[in-house]
Amino acid sequence: MNNNKVPLSSLFISFFSVGAITFGGGYAMLPFLESEICDKKKWINSNELFDFYAIGQCTPGVIAINVATYIGYNKRGVLGAIFASIGVIAPSIIIITIISSLFINFQNNEYVISAISGIKVVVCAIMSHTIYKLIKKSIVDKTTFVLFLLALLLIFVFSINIIILILSSIVIGIIVKKVKRNLNYDK
Image (tube, rainbow, N blue to C red; front, side, top):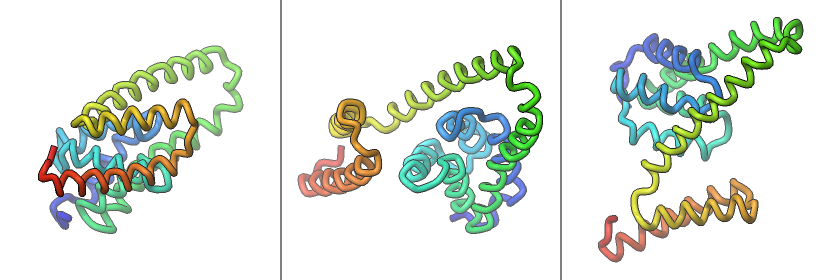
């Protein structure tokens, strides 16, 4: 943890700006976070960001808040976690408050309906790009490729509970690492 290297105000402002321009949830946020946190600020590298996303996906709660909390904690401890978390959710609270107060008057407006339809399509494209990048960073050898295909099969064909799948993948990852270490095979 790098205490005092990142000002709390910078954590808040960076996560506020990412939260303000992201539509579609945590995965849609990944490219913006990578640009702001990894490329511009250089607080963490993209591999660390993907690790935080993996942890954020496996823990209860909203992935965007989980990731902000982890990065904030990594940079400034508990206060950093609080400032980053509040920063990432503040734009949503402001925007939702404004929209909900106005939406009742415009919910049947054809332009509003069209705008929401347009936003949905772009969010799908952003999420597809994010998923592609996650796959590229996560599938690094034959073992991870096989686990990926197995997980797809279990999800789409057998509708396995995702919690069971995540817990199983943790156990499998530990076993595979131990077997590889015993065989002196690191890849």
